Amino acid sequence: QVQLVESGGGSVQAGGALKLSCVASGSIFGRCTKGWFRQAPGKERELVSSISSDGTTTYSDSVKGRFTISLDKAKNTLYLQMNTLQTEDTAVYYCAAGKWLMFQRRCTEWSYWGQGAQVTVSS
Image (tube, rainbow, N blue to C red; front, top):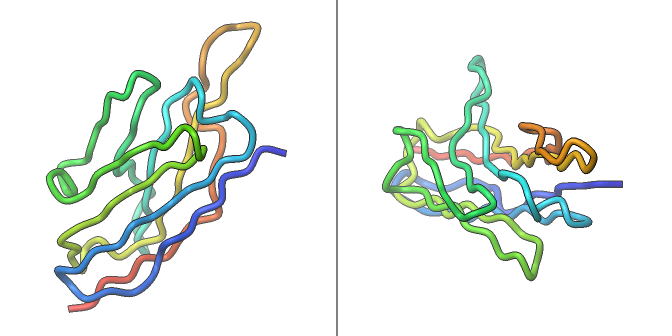
C-alpha cells in the first residue's frame, strides 16, 4: 500500500516559520515529480511548489522567496520549509507525487496524496 504521511503542521504567528514533512512508503519518490498543494477554506486547491526527478523546483508567485521544497532520498521524505508566513498562507497542505507507469515508461501527474496538514497563521 503506497502511502504519503505528512507532519509538521500547526499554528504560528505571522512572520514565523514551519517545516512540513512528507514520508513516502515504497519508492514512489524515485522517478516522478513531487509537490506540495494547499487548499484554503472556500478556495480551490493550488500547487504551491514542486520538485522534479532532476531536482528542478517550481514555486507559485505567492510563496516564491519564502518557501523552499527539498527531498531527502535516503529518508524518502519531502520537505517544505515555510518562512515569513502570512495569514494568507493559512490552509490545509497536501503532499503529492506522480506514479511511474512501468509499461508506458512515463509518470502520471498526481496519483498519490497525503492526508493533509493544517497550517494556521494568525496576525
